[in-house]
Image (cartoon, rainbow over all chains, first blue to last red; front, side, top):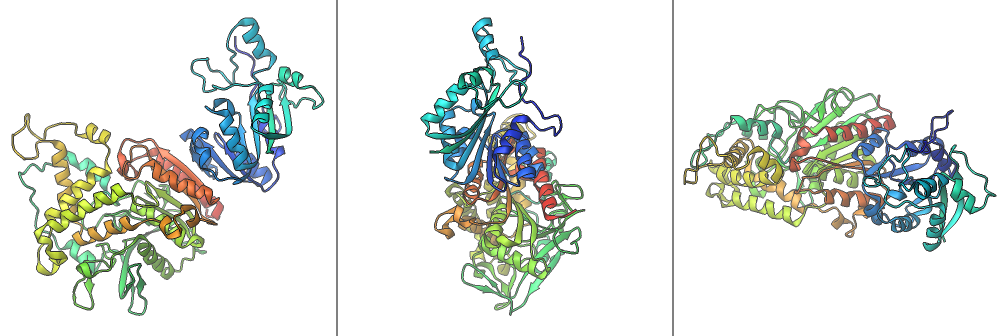
Length: 214
Length: 412
């Protein structure tokens, strides 16, 4: 059984993905931004148009890079796991890792690079602690699949899923300060900040973190 | 260009070529190459005794001339000029029939109406490099001091010299800033040098299948080629033009060796394998039994019909000396510091002469310099020559980059 679509939800008025809009809200206008795993450049375009950022990208697929080139976005064909090491310290105001950390081979190393290269890092990821995932695994005994993460366990690029709690702990381990954290429910709406972590971890469909080096 | 003018064309030509004579025989040379040196059939800009070209070797070269072609129309605010930089043995005939070989322009796939470098929108300039033999001053040109060809009296040329000569041409054409500088291989080296030497005159740069410095292995290949030329007794210490000889065998061998480096093992195997040339079994001789031998012999023979041996020495030397970082305290990033140019770097997976790692080194330096840089590694099994051939992914990347840059520059 496939779970109902959770990602990416789009804002019906603007046509932009809700998690992209959330990320865009976190970025100061006119800043320098590196989007790691930028895909076809949709988020970078949004940031350029709405926040006038000086945006750069890294994308592993040639199709993605070509789509970015056509949009006039300076994007490098590369791999987050290997190429971030080549970027100098403090090169960007923000380094964004949007729905990509679960596909990296070394999430912790990647996160450390984000915090080294950028003054701030913005990380969004699907929450593997969501109750439906738990239901699939705990009750049905199957690896969860959704329409937007439609991969079987044996051919998925997503090799390092985590829950919101797991990610919070990783942030502690790498010495990242959480400046902002937002969980989105299955409707793509931000959940109330006053809710305790365990509620987020259970009902949050995805999370977006704004991090700073401590 | 590392491949012959119209390298792709020659690649196809192979089917119709059969060079199986026991030794390679050379047709008497037509006078055409000679006349192109002195009086090129392209446009030519002449610089007098009072306008010397200051060369890295410490020589002020004067008088001198640069032969070039243009395509398209320069717009009113002169913002749509694209400079194409040719590779090792290329020339200015990028998009028209070559006057020596009669073959189509060497980069028709990239440059022309509706192509990524669209001659309907851009004013495209391509000039023969200094040290070349197609009309720009080089070792085959007449030394005014002696009335004889310069030969080895010509100062050793560098890539910065080539770019300085192009800049003098661009000045004369009244163009302050180039919209884009494009080139592959040695042409890509010139693109990088342009961005370093004249950062404010290059709006966008498209270096393809190139490097910021020539590797030891590549210098080694060049040295073998030069030694082949110089070992030919007809070379006469470089004075063959004066003495009426021609080091055809040496130059052909140099070309054969170099040509192997422009291809890939996979492409060679697919094209030729171990196939015999017009025979069913080996002849137990040193005839060109194998197709690949016949193909290389053809490449060598056709090359000497259009290229000057001393020019070959000079342009290979220019590539050998190329090392941008060395002139900036060993730091490539420093060379690009503060560059306003937007870059798009392209490499090919099977290019072992200028491997992707060379392009990545450029990209890393540009990143460290906070430059605007895009990078694409095109999947191809055609080796270094891929940049001259039909490579849709390269065209897509180049088109996307150039079109976006044109929008940013306000070119319709």
